[in-house]
Structure formats: C-alpha cells, structure tokens
Image 1 (tube, rainbow, N blue to C red):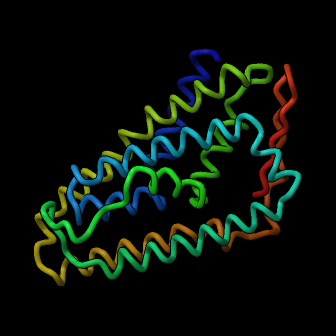
Image 2 (image 1 turned 30 degrees about the vertical axis):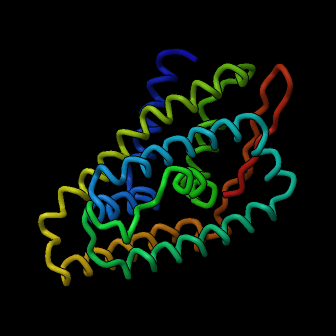
Length: 222
C-alpha cells in the first residue's frame, strides 16, 4: 500500500468509527451510567471485534454472503432484533455508580461478539476490504488494514465513552438520567433505519474483489 492509500484508509476508519452508530450510542450511554473506567473493556472489545471482522472479510467471508445472500438477510434482521433488545435495556436502565455492583456495562467478549450483529460494523469491515485492499496484496494488506482499524477505532470509541462520562455531572437527578437513557435508546433504534428500511430499488450492484495469488471473491448487497 502506498502512503497515500494508507492515509486515505486512516481517514476512512476515523470517519466510520467516529461517527454516530450503534457502538458509539452504547458507549455514550455506558460512559454516562457506569463511568469511563468500567467502560474500558467495552471499548477494547469493539476494537478487537472490528479487527477480526476485517480479517474475516479479507480472507473469504464476503464470498459466503455472495453465494448465499439469504444469510445476510437473516443476520441483518437478527442483529436488528438484538439491538432493539439492547435499546430497551438502555431505555429502562436506572442510575448507577462506579461502586454499584448490581449493574454491569457490556464486557469485552460481549462487545467483540456484538460486532457480528451490528449492521454498521459489517458495512465498515466490508468497505475497508473492497475499497482499500489492492489486488494481489490480500495476504499482507488485510492484516494491515485490520490493525489500522483497531488503532484508529479505539481512540474514537474512547472519546464517545469519555463524552458520556463528562455528562454524568448533569445526570445526577433520576428524571434527567431517565430522559438521557431513553434518548440514547431512541437514537440506537434510529441508527437501524439505513439498514432495515433503505430503498431496495436503489441498492448498489454487488462489488467483487479478487486477490491475484489465490482468488478470493467478495460481494456485498447494498
């Protein structure tokens, strides 16, 4: 990869990981409810999960969805159902403190696994591979892309959690905290809109990417 392509990918990773989406809405709520320290494992889990997804897409998983597109539809709706459940949990959460052992933020492995039902994470991972992996360089470039995604994404996630923590001083009253949590839940649901209710007539044609040494074909619906 040329320095120009690496810089372009870093900007892509920053823009996709730093903008609002399911992960960042959950981190914002977690930082406000649990504090930054208790949200660190959530942050690291997101970083690892996205990195593993980029590796999986780069080494053949995209081809599975091209061959059996129904799998993508099943995953899309199953992920949406899970995110609606998470939105309900956030919206009905009560105020907690760092010392409250009765409630816990999302853990490391749960956050990593969540990426596999997060529609935005799928789009980010597949976009990273299909757009920035040059032909013939899959075996070397895909791990580089995954590593860069993790390095760029972790600070972006930390910033959202930190912003949530900074809001804690304004959320000391139960009514205000409840309003905040309900708002976060609504935003999490709204973040599903581009995935579940997009105009199917305007879907982009599937894009294929093949690596030269041993062709691995990737496809994307939407």
